[in-house]
Image (cartoon, rainbow, N blue to C red):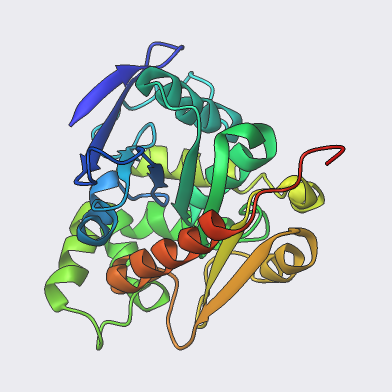
Length: 276
């Protein structure tokens, strides 16, 4: 575990896991977690990913072990994207593959749109082009009234199939997500609720894997149709019968799909040079 100082002075936490062969060219994979999540929520992905990649997991500002922004500090998707760029610069990483869960996938998309040379591929889990049209207006009054952990417990079926996952996983999820600062969660979700970049999706040129939870109820699911129409190099998989948090419920399946997808990216022939 380590921290770095972002350009605005915020201390952001990250961790690196790497069991890849040291004599092979190093490949990087950046994992970005969901709102109310943390880098620790990807722990079950590590056994499958780390033999192949140097995996970088960052706690988004205000989450996990990263510094909480002050109420008067600006918060934007652009700032979250800049945090990722600055972490890559800090680690000397020019390019990486990216995988993002829900809100983490929003930042992955912005990276592909704004920093295309740095993105080798995208794997997006339960992630539409922004949260506008999502559940913010319904969620926030309930969080204020019920408390964050109680709200998450009462809406757990939107996130996990409690009859099909380990009960201790459910409690760990509620403890982790419910430990977030409710005022910051409200600020973060309200900020995300302002964004819909459907008109920019065609700018995503990186090969992209889109995982759609078949029973998902979080976000504006019409966004998936817009992504299918607009992203040029898109592969779509549907996890039938599963609610939103597939990255928590079936981590091995998610990690395997990321590995399989990146393997197809790496085996695609390079484009011919101009004039060849």
